[in-house]
Image 1: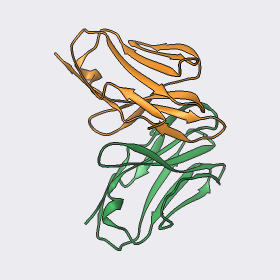
Image 2: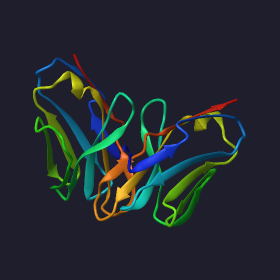
Image 3: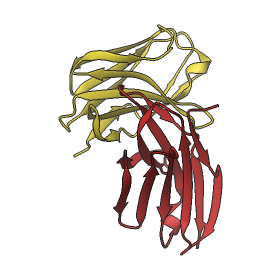
Length: 112
Length: 109
């Protein structure tokens, strides 16, 4: 069974569209994250939720809105997509303050 | 200056060689993660450590808190170890990970 699963794996869309990326973990972890990996392969945290509460919100445009319906799910909704949003987005989870993070396989978003 | 600095940026080795990747971090980092990103893009967590040394198979991670330095060692390297290795620091008191720029390792047969 996949521990952290993201869908879709690939997403190609036009500028101005709204899209969502879904993430689910079956590890019983209480903390989930969204990371962005840019074209230079540099990873940067975007958001973190602990038990459905937002605990980290980095300087991310408000076109990006995370939603955590329960502690096993953290979805990322992006409004009015721009060319610069093209990147690979990784979801991850772990137990807060303890142990290693488990990553999803990534979603490659291409905005054309 | 990035809060987490890795070296080298690129590393090429012959199969069987001993590999060392270094990571220096700034004040405020309370724990360090080592991650491996395969050519296919997936990220796997190798270690999380806040003191001492951890070993898993041919991989060894060490951390020196006084010097704010961590190393990842690979013994008897193999072409399947070819990947990008990323060091990430956990900012004390938060869940925020700050990432190094990665070390691209290529192990030739």
